[in-house]
Length: 372
Image (cartoon, rainbow, N blue to C red; front, side, top):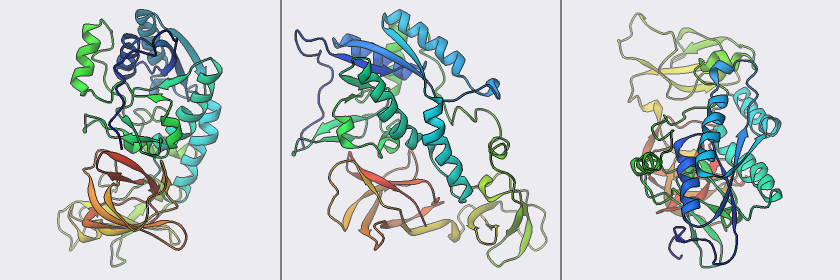
């Protein structure tokens, strides 16, 4: 595989190459747009509204984000196209989000948003507006494969690397995508923004999901999924209390269980270790390092490979959550087309519905939804 393309060079000499960048109002996309301008591209920007916040705008920063995006566009002198993809987001991301919670799993809507919105709906609209390239403020890089395909590579800033969230996008999409921040460290991005006079240079990074905001997650989810109370038991089947719904809990969770002061139990905190879906029972254990919280082997659904599927069995690294250090593992195929992943070291709080994402050193190979 060849080295990462040098996107610091200007666009083709004498040719106007239009890049459409997603401008969110944050510092990352602002600096990405600035760097594209400096590299000689003709830059336009799109601000995406993906959620109708009429039911509680106090929890969503979309209005302020749009104002910040407009200020950035004005300073950089790029045309800003505001678009509303709320219907597409509901149909292709949020509906899946709810279905997964109904199944007792814990989904990651950011992965779906990248695949279904940013690299489909956003991409298609950008092409309709005349763009030849799209760009985002993701911390990621691309590289050329020997067969001419485009590989997804980790960012230079490993702490900010976002390839985990991009693993379900097809490789051909990356062939016309630019990641201007891929070679930068986050502190350098803020410094560039400050030196360029971008007002949002110190704006806090967005966390979580816009449509939830600062609300309690259970309060938000209860708006769409009715409570379904059931027992909380330990591994021996001892009744410890009641939960309001399995969908409100995730593996490894400590807070919000309402367990305490039990006879014949230590003062160690309780953690969610599993869900008995047929019996609507939450299984909990005591202690952060309880063996029941660790798994050496997991199974997944059918994987998505960014480029050509690798030969299996495969020795590689994997992450089962964002920002986790690479975990060495062996990957083999199951009869149903899913994967069996055997880790060299037991993994804590493996969560069905989340993703196992696979790496060959800096190259992201793809990933799969964790099943068991």
